[in-house]
Length: 146
Length: 146
DNA sequence: TATTGTTATACTCTATAACTATA
DNA sequence: TATAGTTATAGAGTATAACAATA
Image 1 (cartoon, chains in turn cyan, yellow, purple, orange):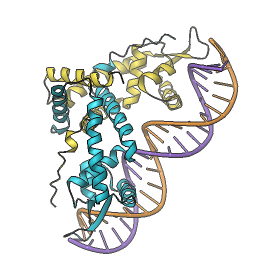
Image 2 (cartoon, helix red, strand yellow; image 1 turned 180 degrees about the horizontal axis):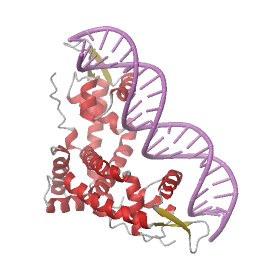
Image 3 (cartoon, helix red, strand yellow; image 1 turned 135 degrees about the vertical axis):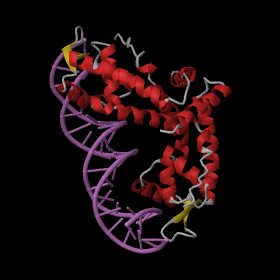
Image 4 (cartoon, protein in one colour; image 1 turned 30 degrees about the vertical axis):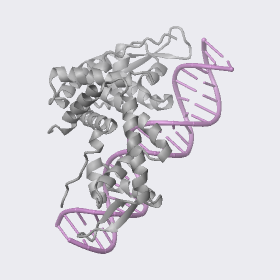
C-alpha cells in the first residue's frame, strides 16, 4: 500500500512534537518501571514523598496536578504494598504526613537509578549538552508566567 | 501553610519535563481551538486529511497512533459537521478516501493560523532560534530508531 | 488468509458533588 | 467559614474481541 503521508505540517507544531517526544520517553519509562510495578504517577508520588518526608496528600495533589479524589486509591495501594506510612500530622489534625517505609525507600533507590537509565536510553540520540539544553528549554516553557 | 516542596529530583527527569511542557502547550492550544470546537485530535485528523486528500482511515490511525474503533466516532462527527467528505477509494473497495469539504478547508485555514499563534505564545519565553533547537531535539528523540 | 471499517464493550484516567472532621 | 481527606459517580480517553465486506 502507498503509505507516503505528508506529515510535514504537523511536524512544525510545538504541541505535536512535544507530545510525541513525551509519549516516546514515557513509554520507555513505563517499560523500564514495569518490574517495580510502578506507573509514572506512582513513581512521581513516591519520589516526592521520599524527597519530602511528612508531605501531605494535598501538597502531592498541587505539585503533580492530581485531583484529591484520584489520589485516594493510589495512596491506599502503595500503603497496602507497605511502601509508604501515614503518620498524624504534627500541627494539623485533619492531615496525615506521608513518608517512605524502609521497603519503599529501598525500592525507590533502585527505581530512581532505573529512571535515569531510561532517560538516557530514550535520549540516546542526544549528546549530554543537548540533553541539558532540551531540559532548559522545556522548563522555560512550563515555568513561564502565563 | 508551608508549601516549600523539593521538586528538584523530578525536574531532572526528561519524561517529567517533557510531559509538563506538553501539557502547558496543549492546554493553551485547547483554549485557542475551542472557538472552532476542535480538540487536538480533531485538529490533527483534519490537518492530515487537508494535506493528504484521499487518505484512508487506516492511514490516519497509523500516523496518529489512534486505534481504528476510536476513530469511527470522530470521523462520524466531523462528517456530520460537513467538514469532511468520504469518497469511494479508487483502487480498494473496502476503504474510503477522506477529503476536506470547502467548509472544512476554510475552517482549517483559520485553525492552522491560530495553531501557529498558539505555539508562539506558549513559547514566548524562547527566541526563534531556541524554538528551532527545541523542535530539532524533540524530533531527534521520537524519530530515533528503537 | 489478511485487511478495512465497524459495533460492542471493558478498562483506565480525569472530573464533579457532597460528606466528615478538623482548623 | 474554609480546608484535608474521603466516597460515590460521571465522563473522557484508550483498549480488546469479533464481525461483514473486500483484497
